[in-house]
Amino acid sequence: MGCGVLGCPALYAQPAAPLPPEVEAALARAKLPRDALSAVVVEVQGGSKAVPRLAHRAQVPMNPASVMKLVTTYAALEQLGPAYVWSTPVYLQGTVQEGSLRGTVYLQGLGDPKLVMERLWLLMRRLQGQGIQVIVGDIVLDRTAFDVPDQDPARFDGEPLRPYNAAPDALLLNFKSSVMTFVPDAPTGLARIQYDPPLAGVQRQATVALAAPGTDCGDWRAALRAELADPAKVSFQGVYPAACGERTWPVAAADPRGFAARAVEGMWRELGGKLTGSVREGKVPAGLKPAFTAVSPPLAEVVRDVNKYSNNVMAQQLFLTLALQKNGVGTFDGAREALRQWWTARVGDADPPQADNGAGLSREARLTAQGLARMLQVAWASPVMPELVASLPISGVDGTLRRSQSRAGIAHLKTGSLRDVMAVAGYVHAPSGRRYVLVALVNHPNAGAARPVLDALTDWAARDP
Image 1 (cartoon, rainbow, N blue to C red):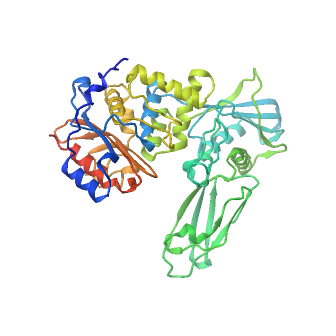
Image 2 (tube, one colour):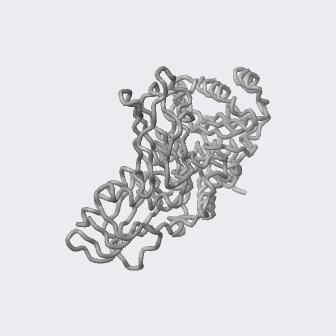
Image 3 (tube, rainbow, N blue to C red):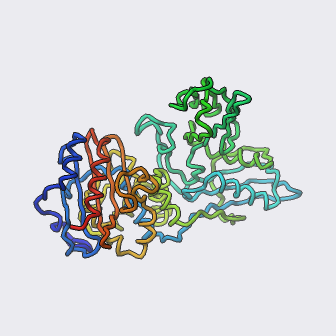
């Protein structure tokens, strides 16, 4: 068995050293046993010669939660390149005359993870730029680039309307989610509601009554008593506290499969376009050439969104794109195999991750602290290191680490949390100029109390021995 570019795993297989006293104390306060934690702290450089400052249960496979996104995003940066972009071709079949297309418009999804409302608006404007105001026919959505099974959005945690549970899609529009914006208008006693994106065939309540004067903001979402389960209707039986000011509420589609059709038709009609047929699913005919192509932001920008804000569905889009580029179709099995081959070539054949869906929103995903630490050392020496590091939240500054109690700015770390899981992994910067890889994974029913443990370990790692 090979040992990869950083040497054999025996490097980490040393007798467990005592944990730093401040970490031991934080574990005790959190009522967490020592064996709930797996951790490695090692210099970024030195490879097989770098002796870890800390290696605690480093070879134990653990659930990493969203820390798994580090593996997916680094693999994508290396295999696709930071400048990689996703295309969404638009095809016209038929003739355009006097502002009308007599025929069919095809939108072909190829996995763009950031085809958000603003870019859908631009796409529809470009379609009108072809001289089309009326489509005498259908709009067909081709989503065949990904072959993934339908997912029950409630399966993971019983929260089907949370955007983090959205499933991947070759034609992923606005993360399969709507955003409701509430704007209080005290003189009228109402809050106005704006919905984005526009959705065809959905009745949406335009206003909601304000709560009694003096009501604090509190749990304003519960106070609205929203009824969101009907894909064709949104209504509120409660009130909105004026003390909240303007607030936004992102909500996943009640009908995820039908969301794209509603959004495409809704945006087309919002721009004044007319459609005599319907928006339906289908496949682009062979030999048809695109009229134009919408292009995504570059991968480096997408990776930043994935890691800074831990976007699950964007991570799955990246993961499936690895298989799409390799095999011509995006499947989870193909993505896992592409990742395995890349890991073996770049990191070694020991401690390969069990990536599952590539996003960490999983009870089956596993990796070891030593395996991830080796990968992060490899990444530090990679040409794409600047893009990867810049994508990570900065302790006490931004992203998912903006509320970290570690000293501000001392670390670039990806975070992860699920029920029974809390984790961080990335790079810590010492005042001496040394850089350290830090991986810390907590698996325990009381993992939700582990944030001070991870903060203490981060602060300790930033102090040179």
